[in-house]
Length: 280
Image (cartoon, rainbow, N blue to C red):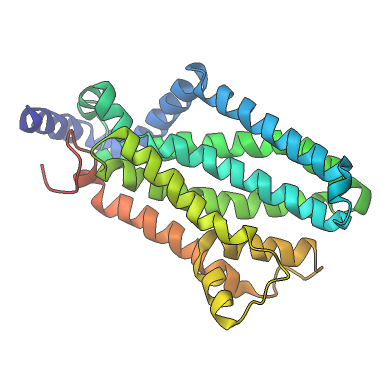
């Protein structure tokens, strides 16, 4: 069964090689994946949950007496980091469902016989996941504006949230697709991807007053999430320019290039009716 479908898929892709060479295949599939995500209600539901959580954090940050020790720039930084975390989480959930979810719903077989390459399938799935990140960023704009407008850093805060958030979201969404393609079940893919994100975000919750030596600094720079958020904090709270400590951007860029490169190189072996990266 698997072999027959794969052969059919290869034949369909060969007949449509001209279309794929123009790049139209992944664009059409990406548009279809975005429609499925938003019209099915999954995208709006995730955005609603994100807005509720972001509303709570913004309200507490702005009004709760227990948080009055926060200087306003630190409050803006907190909301920006929370917005990035939620947006990346939403994108990761969608990408982690990309291949393993299709397998469990029995729809991957139909997808494999469409006249597009398997790399185009992965690109379409990644496009849908990133569309949720961009929508999440748009939802976060009013919350950042509420806190950042009074200190004149709204433009800077939004630019940082968009640029660094997009970088992290692209990298982790690509990782989520890799996990999804290699997982035996959708639950495993979703649980593993969310656990990975929690592990990466955990160091951001360490109190700043705790002793932090060179080893901790290395861990921060190696972690693509903590390094991106540390660079955001340096600019919003400490007033540094974006050109300072550019080494913080190494790990986010590496994860994007590495994960996206793995999808591109191994795409034909990853998108299969059974989990794993073998041929067929």
